[in-house]
Length: 289
Ligand SMILES: [Zn+2]
Ligand SMILES: [Zn+2]
Image (cartoon, rainbow, N blue to C red; front, side, top):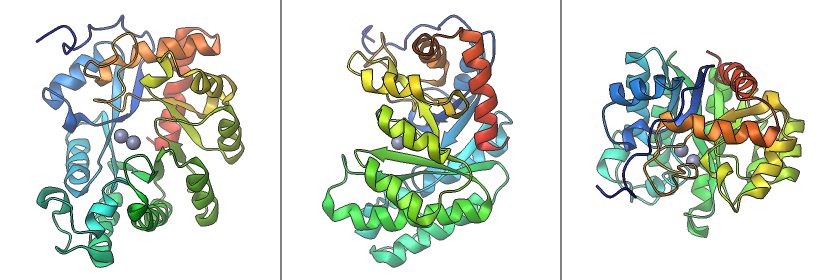
């Protein structure tokens, strides 16, 4: 393994334990036990495991049932919904949904998400939303139908809503307002600027910052973090993606939360312990655990 692909070293442990509010353990190397042990050894004692399709959502629910410090979020990712409608979802991710696609296949899949959302270890519905980066105009109708359905499911079960918003800020905010956002709504991997952070703050939406807040070209994100009310700020890895600097390009995992947290504390001009304490409390409130 070249040092470029090698897992980054363990950071200095946090003194105040926090939660990785958004991770994909099923896409990372090693067992769940190994990931959780490594994370806990540096003060990342809890994770929210996020499902992106039916198979991943069932896995998230099962994993959260098996481990006390894992909470689940379940959904059809905004890039998955068009695949189901267009009949392109592979057998695994479609599992349980009707073959051949169409709105009926999407309805079948949503019915399974609805069932999973009722489980007590499932704390959130998501990630759902809109992704105009990976999905072209032909997928927008399916994304929007799926997004609206997930909002309804989250509200009916009283669960948090986890938003994936990629290059679709205005439409995500509009649809949330039209549907009426759930009481607890989290923008995962927050990617808006300071102006959007003001809109989110006014609406009471949580903003979860990922490793990209450390990237050199991410000043707009740091500006957003500077003005976001601290009680709405969360932290996540979105691992295996978005490894924080200086490890960009190497595999990400929940144990790297301290790297991002220290960078965030610096942006806010507060101590690491104060930052961790705030985030820990607000994450528990956002996900209701
Ligand atoms: Zn996402
Ligand atoms: Zn994600």
